[in-house]
Each structure stands twice: as structure tokens, then as C-alpha cells.
Image 1 (cartoon, helix red, strand yellow):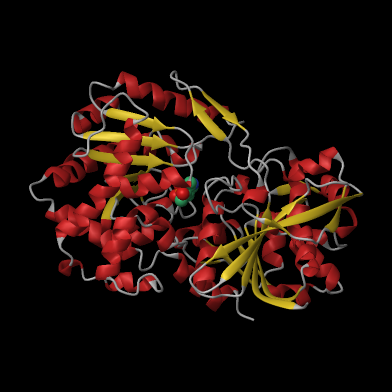
Image 2 (spheres, rainbow, N blue to C red):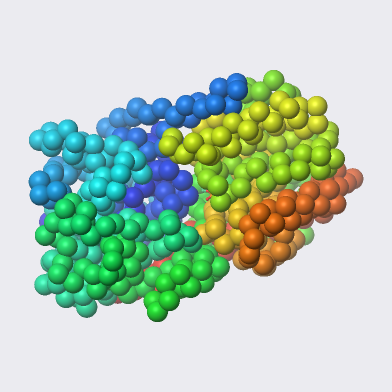
Length: 553
Ligand SMILES: *Cc1c(COP(=O)(O)O)cnc(C)c1O
């Protein structure tokens, strides 16, 4: 049976549910939210991704702060149907069979299929069965094999499933760029026959984050699928997945305004636009916030842009506060299962949770412990969460220090580090904290989406001006607080101290007093305005922009 698609969205990872470890972080969460919006909006879309046996790992934190990261066991058959079709790709000159699982993502209007490619099947050599074992694990050769399966295998799987006409092949990050090679082969190696059907999202504001492969390795792994003019498409000296994707896409964009500009500067001569990320409003709002919005923003479920017209003055403060406190209660109950300190419903609670990598600077708030004690003593409690990559010893050390501080600072400020950050823990934190703290090195956060999830629940952002928050804060400075200036970091270390001091100042003179001041009117007004921002920062709006700019046929 012949079938059509408006868009086939290729992504190395996707976050669908906590029990399926098929993602590592923000990139996968965005893919999930975009697909959920497509399903709600009735779009004829499908997603192609990989059936990782082990995506993110199970983090265990010991009392001394050291960690272990263990493989997670899960069975795809518990969640998905196996499709009958298998296809073949060639890696290192060998045939590798690729099967697929189908997850049905149900939305308000439609069910969108997500196809998880799987090489762990009968007939493949043991080494090839492991191509879909570890997300972002292994060496360059392994990564290339994975990208062959995702890109080339993905297009072949679509054909095997009967999808003949696809309006746009969307590459979510350069990992999927090899899909262009299969399209080139199908279309007589005419670039101009491929380009009109492809679009590309770049996510990485630093050069080192872009996939680049040695041509010797590429020829060895990918073989004949590399066209004769690959150097023209992907770079003279080495194979850049980003250049390949840009050169064979009709439209390329970054994921926030500032990230679009940074990417444009990184690839002079190319044209890079931006579509700022969003979050799926129904996935990330607490039940109490849903109830509040059903009452005060009718229609927001089908069309979250109505949140932009939220009549803040008409919503009773008490209703907003009660909705928030209900979520906070759930968070406190969970936290108190994991710590001997008694986390307090009525104390200002700061949460800071994310994948632990150096540029996110999770330790900024501990830059000057005397200042922290001065501003936080007896008034602030802090919750952290976040996994490090199992091979990133540096970031594991960061987590260890943070855990140790929770005891060394215990007479001044309660600190807890929750283990095993995942979407369920994220949901508790982004709805139950009072303040969402984010302190990336400027120009290093492409967008960030957890702060948008916080806004949606009336949790206030306290963040460096980077990624999406530059836009959010500019739209409405009353919706949260900024840390530091807009200037980019000339000297990273000096800026660290300046940012840290500004963070303490904001806490001392703005955040803490406002939280404890009498009836909290000002605070609650900020909460409503934070919710209002999500009228823009939602994935329905992203999908509309994709349709106007990236998915036009
Ligand atoms: C939203 C989310 C992310 C992405 O958040 P950032 O803002 O990029 O840090 C990562 N992990 C989980 C579990 C999430 O829910």
C-alpha cells in the first residue's frame, strides 16, 4: 500500500516516557514534544529514531557523592509493536539487517507513528547487533555505523513500510545527515533533486560539538554510499555532518534567536535562520495548573497560544498559589524520602536540574560559600538533579562535590541531590520548585527547554541571559529574573565570578524578599506572567513555524 507523509522527522534520540531510555537529554525531549504537537495538530508526520537498548543510564549516588551508572533493562515489546519489514544497510562492507518497532503516539487529533530502528536481530553478527546498544557510546566508527542505520536505514525503512512520497525529510541535528545519501542514490545523484525535500535543525553552538569524521574512516564504514562529490558537500578535509546537512537542505535553522546568530557566524556563507524551541503544554503542566487554565484560559489545550492573552488580573491569586502549593507538596514529599533534612513547604525552594556538563556551570551558586550562606541562611533550600555521562569523570566529580556540600553547608542551607534525573523527576521539579535556576556559560546554551516547562507551571526563572531566556526575559522582564549582563564572555573565569556575584545579589535583594514579603502579590503576579510566556514557548507554535518555513512543499 502506497502512503504519503508530510514530514519524516529523523532524530538520534526521542524522549517519550521515562520507562523507555531512548534519549539522553534536551535534544530527545524536544523531538518528543514536537511529535506530540504534530499528533495534537493532526499532522501527517512520522518519526524515525533508534531503539537504544541503553540510552541514558541508571544513576546511583552513594553517600560520599560518588556515582555508578548502570545499564537499564527494558523490553521494547512492552511498549511497541514490531513491524514485519526488515531492510539492509551496508557497513564496513557487510550487510546489516535493520528491523523496527512502532510506537503509536496518540494526540488530540491523530496518532503519529514513531519508528525505532533496531539492529539487535537474528542474522546479524554480534558486533552489529550492538549498533543500537549505547546511545552516544563507542568510538567514531561506531557512531558512523549508527548514523548509517539512522539515515540510510531510516529512508529504506520508510520505503519498505510503503511511504513513497515524503514532503520533508527533517534532520534533527547532524546525526541524521546520511539520509541525504540514500535520497541522492534514489534521485540520480542530483543535489537539486534532494535539496527541496530536506530541512535541518542544528542544536550545537560550539564547534567541537559537531560530528566530524575522517574520510578514511568514512570510506571504510560507509563505502559506496558516499557519492563522488562528498567533499564538495561535506567539507574538503573531513566529513562534517553539519555541512552535509546544510548543503542538502532547503532550510536550516538554530533553536533560539541567539543560537541562530551564533550558528550563522560559525558557518559563514551558509544561510541559517532560527525557530525558537518550545515545550508541549499538555505534557509538562501539573494537574492543578491544567485545572486552573481550563477555567481561565478556555481553549488552551487545543491552542496554547491563547495563553498569551491570559488576563492576569482576573485570576485570583489564591487559585494560582494553591495550584502551585499542591505541586510543591508532591515535590517535598518525594524529596523527604531521600534526605534526612526536613524540606519545608514554606521555604523558598530553588531547583537546578539538568544533564551535568561543564558549560552548564551547575556549581555557580557555590562560587562564594560565604555569600551563599549570607543570602540563603535559613531562607532557601536547594534541590539538584542530573546525570553525568558515564565516561565524563570531570562532571561526575562536580556531582560529587555538590553532594558533599549538602553536608558541609547543612547548618546554613538545606541541599539535596536527587539521583537519576528523568522526565518524571523533571515533572516534579519544574512544577514544585519556586525558582528554576539555570546558569550556563553565555552563548553555550542553544535554547534550553526546562525553563519553559517551569514557566508553564508558574515557577520563576532565575537564569543567565542565554538561549531561549534572552527572548523570554525580553518579552516580559516581570516573568522572572536575569543573572548577569547580555555581554558575551570574553574571559570565562572573570565572568564566572561576576555572574556568581550577580546571582547572590538577585537572591538577596529581589528573590528572597519578594518571596517572603507579606501577601506575595508581586510574586504571584510574576507567576501568572511566566505562564503567559508559554503562549509563545510551546511546540504547537514551533510546529506552525516549521510548517511555514521548513515543511513547505
Ligand atoms: C526538559 C528536559 C531536558 C532539557 O532541559 P534543558 O533545559 O536543556 O536542561 C533534559 N532532561 C529532561 C529529563 C527534561 O525533562
